[in-house]
Length: 368
Image 1 (cartoon, rainbow, N blue to C red):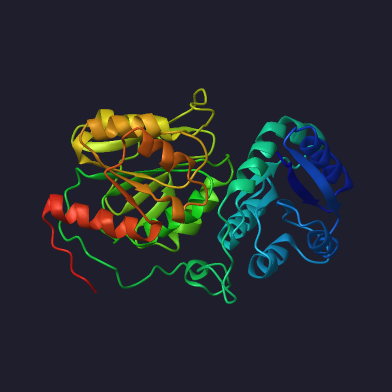
Image 2 (image 1 turned 90 degrees about the vertical axis):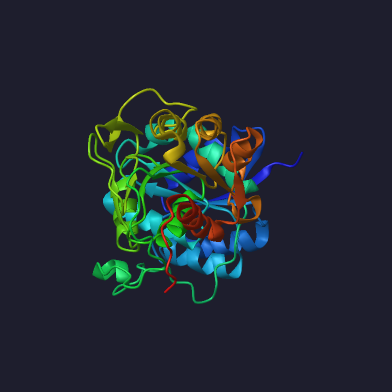
C-alpha cells in the first residue's frame, strides 16, 4: 500500500526536522519535502504532488493564512495547521479552519522540541485523518463572515433578522451537539441557523485548551443565539449555546426546575477530553425525551454508544451525512449503533431541528 506523502512547511529548521522525523517513523507515511516558506512550498507541491501538507501559521514572506487561502482556491488539498498555544494562534487557527484546513496541532511556545515529540501520536493521527478527508475548493471570493475587519463579528453586531421564531418554547428542551475533525465549521453552520429563542444548546467539540474560548467568542459574534464557553454550575438558558472548555469534560445536571452545566476534569474518555460520550450520556440520564441529539463530522467513535443510549431514553437524533462531512467517522459509528433518527446533509440539520421542535412543542414557526 502506498505511503501518505507529506510536505512540511515551517520557517523553523528545528520544527521542520522534528516533524519530518516524526512522520518518517510511521510505516504508512513519509515526509517527501520540507519548505522554509510558502514560495519554496509552492514549488514542492507542484513537483512532488504530496497527499498532505503541514503548514505553520506564522512565516516570513507570506503568512500561512494567505498561502492557505491561495492554495484552497487553486490547488485544494488536505492541510494540517501547526499553531502556537496563544490567543493570537487560536484566532489565526480558527481562520485557517474556515478556509478549509482539516485540523491543527497546537505546539507549545517554549520547549518546542520536547513538546512536539510528546505530540507525535497526535500529529501523525491528524495527518492520517487529513489524507482521507473530504477537501472542498474555496470559492474565489470566499471571505467567511467576521474574518475581515469591519465584518459583523468584528463589529460585535449580531445578525438582525431571524430565520425563524419559535415563539413560546418549552425550556425543558435541550439540543446536544458532538463534533470533532471538521466540526468547528459544521457546528457554526448549525448555530448560525438557529433563532434567538432556540432551546439551550450544549456542545462538545474536540479542541485543546486555549482554543475554545476564542472559538466561542467568534461564534457569539456570528449567531443570533449567545455562544460562550461553559462554566461549571451555570444555568443552561434558552437562546444560549455552551461549548465544553478544551481539556475539560462537559455534562448536564438537573437543579430543581433548571438544567445546569457541569464542567469537570477527569480521565480522557475514548481518548478525548472533552468527550462527546460524557455529554451525551448525561443527556440520556438527565434530559431523556426532552433532548435533541446532533452528531457532526469527526474521526473515531466518540459518543456513538451514548447517542444510542440517548435514543433509547427518548431523544430524537440527527447525524450528518457522509457527503457533507469532512470525516464521516463519528456519524458513521453513531448510525451503525442505531443512534440516528435522521441522517441529513449539514445544511438541513438546523431546519430539521426547528421542524422537530415545532412538531413536538406546537410552536408556530413564522418564516421571515
